Image 1: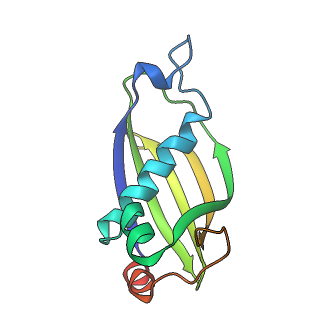
Image 2 (image 1 turned 45 degrees about the horizontal axis):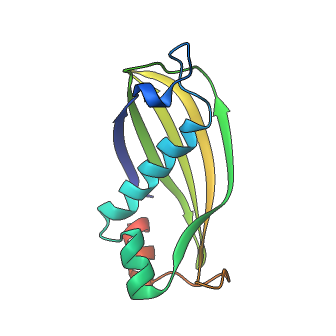
Length: 131
């Protein structure tokens, strides 16, 4: 399946008083990486909403914190598509600082309509995520 890479720097606003990244901010980092991944195959969140009437939401997320990152670290986030079905996507996301794995995430996404009901994703999106 398809793999993507995004990189982000850790800013002061991402850290606690000790300069360590606050744990909840890792959810923001992996969300940004997923957004970049979808955009890299020519589908943005606004495009999906406006042209297809769908939203991609997180159904479940399991994080494994291995090591902390700190102020001014560069985070490399690798997002891999594991499975694509009609209304769901499973991804594995890993965050590295230099060559050190610091976090793994298993994320289950779903596509819904404006009423919050599961909705089939566009075939073109499925194709782009699986080739």
